[in-house]
Image 1 (cartoon, rainbow, N blue to C red):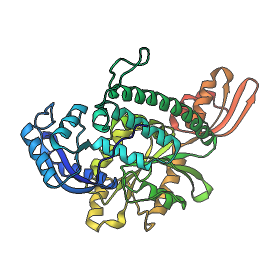
Image 2 (cartoon, rainbow, N blue to C red; image 1 turned 45 degrees about the vertical axis):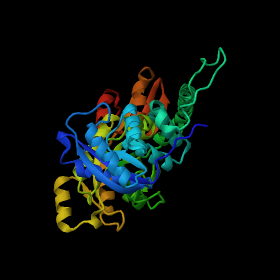
Image 3 (tube, rainbow, N blue to C red; image 1 turned 60 degrees about the vertical axis):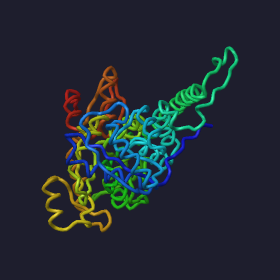
Image 4 (cartoon, rainbow, N blue to C red; image 1 turned 180 degrees about the vertical axis):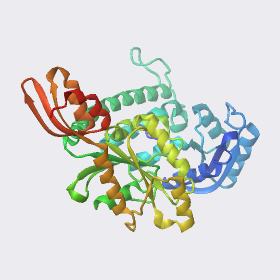
Length: 420
């Protein structure tokens, strides 16, 4: 069994700012601190380095790299954490220079995800992302790679290094995880299809990590959802039923929080989890009113949604945590997000207004239709099932008679088959 050696407990943080990121640099470094503390590391020092040209050896210039290495040693740091992604060779060069563990933002996020994952699917997704991240970094992740082992013909080359053996083992593990994920995805697709077949609209709760998505879901639905004041407190999607005024029911699904510079490997690994946003009828975009970087975090959330194909989903903005801000800060937040519904998941303020908005949104977003579609155009029936809420379906004289509520775009496509 190959084990990854987690960074130790004392961390020296290094923020990287290019010419275009000077104003954002303090916020980025503060978020890196929050990430490392979420993992249980103690910050013993931090600094931001402004980089004009990237060095292939250390990312920074050699002189600056030596200064940082010496400061980290003076502070007895066990690990140096970079906010920018390091290449495998840069990471090895830094470890040789600083004589301690060196990791980057991506490595920290992967470790947080590994600690938070609960379900089998989430653990498989995290393992896949970690192995793909570690594969080119074997020499800095394992301590036994310098040994050489002989081999017999037909198994491995004579004098094949332990590195090559480990690389082959990890490649086999990656292939095995992908097969397991394929099976799990099939099982999840069945349960999702059963949920989609219910005549109940469903929405996904999205937003920047620690914006209060899980708290809001729990407050709205009165159910128990994992809540913690930590980044990435929960990775596994939780679906809860919300009953609105008049008896209207909807399903709301929490999703993993987004973050700046989310590693692309994690976006790919968690694509199946984020598919909940693709299949939702609408999104609740939760924004932290108490966060000074709320505007930037909202933009990042939209960027991630665009990357996974959910940017154009109908969306209700929710300005959460209004109990933590004064009147002036709240006024500024409302100016920044004029269409958002201000709420507090903790005190309950604004939740009734949000429920009314959700009900109005659901009612207006779906138009009632009654169509008779020929069996030869069952693709249109499938479209209604996929995008709307089927209330009744009967097969009559070579047609599929469907009574449903669908988005306006779907109504236009099937309009010619409308019955009186």
